[in-house]
Image (cartoon, rainbow, N blue to C red; front, side, top):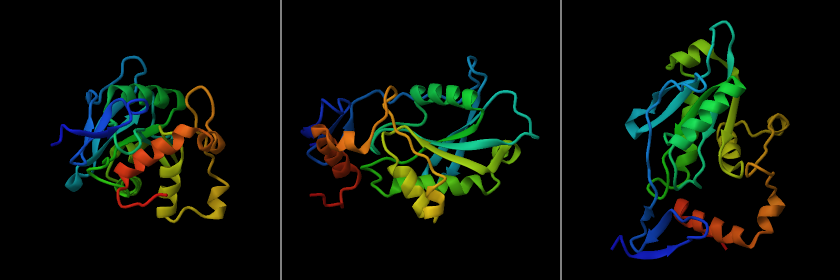
Length: 222
């Protein structure tokens, strides 16, 4: 039965558990809000369809006081959630992107990628790359009018750059030359996270195994 819990990690993921049928139960409020004009920052957002056939969509954010003669960088933002929880349409990410777009003066696309285990890895990477290609196809007026596609940035809310490097490699952009142009910095908000600090943490293996078991079930880890 789905309500029989096989295992969970309440100390790390209090909002999810795994039933004996293998399904993840998301025990948190999955509230979503509509895109809007934010009164605090004057940032506008709207819903855009990336690939309607697979229900892949995003929000695009536009900073205030834009003019077509000044092209802005484009930021692709991927929400955190270890590939198994979260939504780009939550109040948390709407608030974050409103302030980020206003302060950085960029146009941002916040992708609501499909999550595991319903859509296991590599779906998240395929969705992310699909959105980047979509931005170059001339289908979105805000991108056509206000964006400089020579200045495209990838950002994510998680504590590593796995998604970013995978997307670049998938698109043939992971060359040694391009590595010199890519700067990655992960943090908890107060301090930087290093590879050594993760590997030295006894909880890291427990968390990573849990994530991989349910986001990439065909992978064998030892």
